[in-house]
Length: 299
Image 1 (cartoon, rainbow, N blue to C red):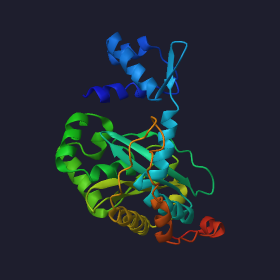
Image 2: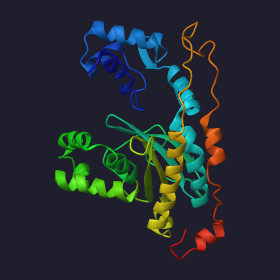
Image 3: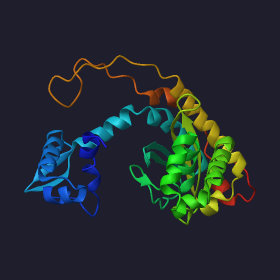
Image 4: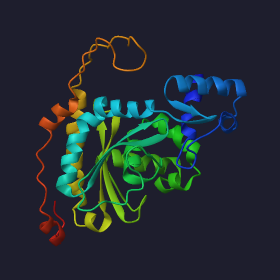
């Protein structure tokens, strides 16, 4: 683990239950020497990622600033956000976009098109279980064999991993079936009252950029034909993938003159979501009276 990665792991210690921490607590939690801990907290504070008050450290405002910049600039959000939002409105669902780094599956975008709020356990910004939900299984299915093998060897004895496959061959075969199908569905794996369906979004047809998902109340989900719904979601994900494939390299911004902030001389690129919104399908929402009266499995 690099020193930068280890320093950034300080940020992972904060949560709803641990909103502030002393340097001593941070050092103990990460097995750091006091000298190293003080250096890490000093540098993180100077960068705005931590704030210090009365010997207590807490997350700093730079994090929410970076969150705003991600919403403005992230290609997956800009390309897929308008598309999954329109589809969620049409289907009466909550739409999600999810990305993965290392072993972390994180929801980066959410749009509610549901007739009433859903009891989502994992909203935007939350880390999802690696082996539960249609979202995680789709992302796993897009990994190469070597990476999947390493994950299997690391987690093969956990119940969630065993649910996908009790042995390596079964685990691999199950995920390859999802990849070939183009989507995955799950029923009550994270929240008993909900069901979800997910499809991959790619950069070039192979390299995964993330995942597009629709989440429904389970009894409402049962009114849809699963194959038709999967086909429609896969088509929407493919449209987002096409927009990502058309991305062109842009001129690198110049270095900021005065610390963190807007890069001097940099021209702000037009957000890709405007392009995505123009090209996204015009999905017409099903009237609520028809939704509630639906008894046949149709889209």
